[in-house]
Length: 161
Image (cartoon, rainbow, N blue to C red; front, side, top):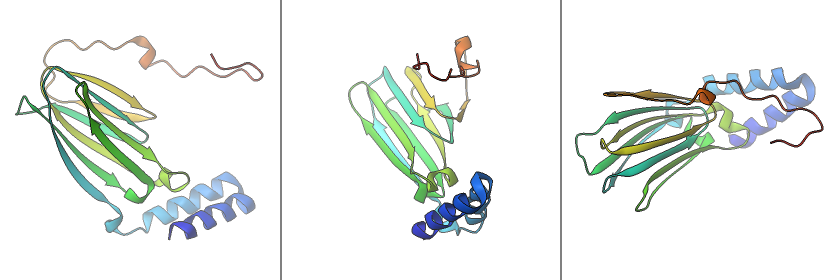
């Protein structure tokens, strides 16, 4: 099925441009069965303070304070899971979660994370693009201005800074 999607997208790009390819991918995504979705839960036993690092594209991350101060619970709902590769690992410093999109078919997929963390957890997100929802926030949250600034435009002929 994935080979057929790639072939269709390739033909659409050759004959109708990028907008035709987008229409083909959208049509394929709306006809996929529900079994293309997947839900997983992982529980990590930790010793606070720790860091939870999440990296992904087309992700929505909801973070809440967990009931158990020694556990990080990660629930992920993968929508059209065939287009994503998911990895989660742990070391003494923290828990690392990565949702990587596969070429071509990854544009159809999306990951929705629900993460329960202890109160003494440092959170790091690298989402391109994505949404972050913080539940049960009590205290001050400070975000640098650069997080909301538009991306700098690249100047042709100049190396990126």
